[in-house]
Amino acid sequence: QVQVVESGGGEVQAGGSLRLSCTASGLSLDGYAMGWFKEREVVSCISRSGGNKYYADTVKGRFTVSRDNAENTVWLQMNSLKPEDTAMYHCAAGPDCVTVVAGSFNYWGQGTQVTVAS
Image (tube, rainbow, N blue to C red; front, top):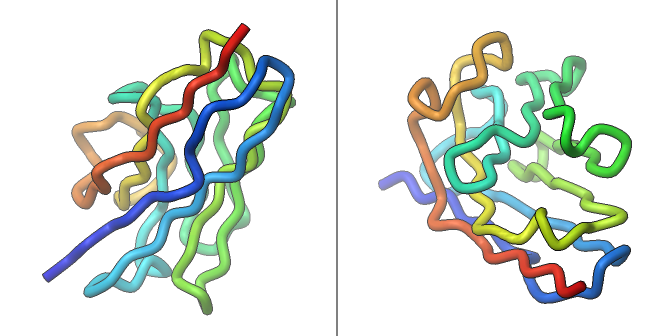
């Protein structure tokens, strides 16, 4: 049974940082591009090898996506957080980062809540 699990969310003040983690059981993440979604809106995506990364304009320069396939883990470093970043964040496994839409990603976690207080 495939299970994707996110962690690392919480409540921070505006300007603060969080580091989200995503790991999986029953699924080798190295076979997938990994996306981070704010609800169903893509925030970032990293290719299988980690060589290609995508960021939504709203997070460029503030968020950094990374992965370690040996650890079967993906991270999203979130810096300079703003109140509008508040949402449930999900990671999901998909085919690639070329067409990054929620519907093309097959394996989703339950999400981790990020709350940014002003």
